[in-house]
Image (cartoon, rainbow, N blue to C red; front, side, top):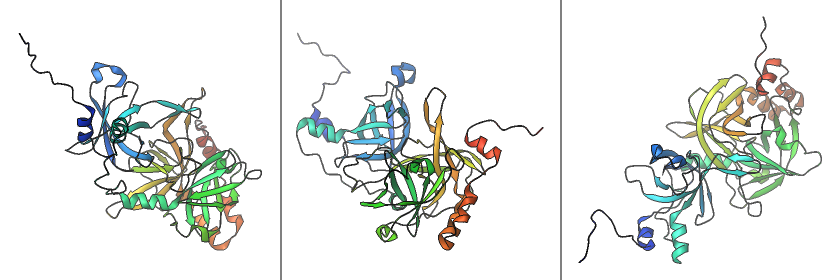
Length: 362
């Protein structure tokens, strides 16, 4: 006598799952993560959304997203955003430790790559190129003005201003007197020199670099905004936290999204995920409807506790309104005395950048 259990589906082979998944979306697109943080039933099927910050490998083999997840989210499905919600991946790591800091990005494995490798079949070619995205124009503008800066063992990002000039953070090029200073951007590797550098541990932690402008003709100068940042506005951050130093041909910055949390004349604080390698990189505003990308700040630091704990979603940037006119004058006149004005000796400003409370004038 056979017994039939209703409501139970027969397990299907992996090949049927391969037919159901879709190629991953490209950098900058929005995705949705379904998970159960901490394995707690109270949080069952929690949904978080974020952007694809970076793509690793040609297949690709890994996606980086700023969709917030927690321990216990591993194994959760990842979908495209929208009414169809196509399955594209699975969370493989929600919390990780790298180079002495917590990584604020979630690692996602594209299921089409995983299942194709397991079943030993050629992965389906994407129905649309990974680069095809409504905001591709925005990503192109970001890529064309953001560079990787390396000085000895230190590295960070920089913003191309045109005429061979690049602005970055002073602490990124701290050892430039004893180490080679190099710029990498879109397949080009060029040596640079320091034209100006803020003294160590002093606001605003900026440096101006110069390299052969003929080698950067494929780059586009960044548009520096003359409109101050506004609390609550959406922004993007760009930097190079992870890259393959043996293959820099297809180097592209990692891009994270967030909002401006607080604003002062001398500091912008954002909620973008910022790791080591973002220092000197830009904070972008996207002006709609033409999708014009403007730099409103230069990333300087994120918050670190006395115990060494790093908070990647709390970070500070130098407003471009502090230095943009001074750099423009120097580029035109080559008068280095103009750059000295970037150094700010006001006690209130120095205390603010050390995250110390203001002293009362009473």
